[in-house]
Length: 330
Image (cartoon, rainbow, N blue to C red; front, side, top):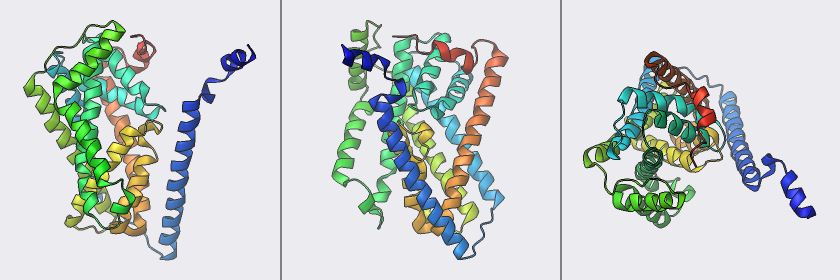
């Protein structure tokens, strides 16, 4: 009896998952903070001042906006592939508004917020959930493919998992994400257990493969945004673009997987520090801080644009109003 009472009175923040998540986050922050400190000391010791080329920085921001747009279009296409015909502008607005939920630990808020608002627009629970899940899976798969160049770079192979394990993971993701019958079968099995309406047995091929193509374009935008940001503060050659693609892709994958890190905070930075220092030296510390600031700023901008679209149309409440109902579907 005493054990039951103790369990009931245990604070929610002391749950095993939250404790483990916090420890992992602290470990990541410790690594990143220590590395940043070393790099800034190195810059001061060498009396190096970092100046910004605003032309390259502006181009980086344009690419970052392109990444946010293609991410939303990817979801819109997958909704269409599953039979939900929703206006593009409103889906983009929903994804942009809900993206702020990435900064809440656990990353549940971004999914819950998106589902709540898309369902208010008439999409079924099963379709919205499947589209968002498949979108994430496709992004991880494309990121894994984009990470392949890192396995051919000296000094990086030792820091990465074995090529065999990585290849097996990528093959598994490809089978599930690129062969819809398997993905739909898994989803329908879960929906039957929940007593929910099942998904269609097939997807519309045009929107589905269009979403794959848009996902590839997205990782290209992210990669070029990172490279252009690096180029704005350091002289990096065009030949380093493959490395930037690999690093940006790996950071994207790790950010998706590391659900304990809000918006990949710390995880992205760790990958950038390890992957880009060989070509940037200690100035990579400036890039890491600057690029995170750019990402946060862009998320705030697109969320504001999304909220403006929704208020103009007057069809869906804002993310703040929709959030309390986001967890309603069971």
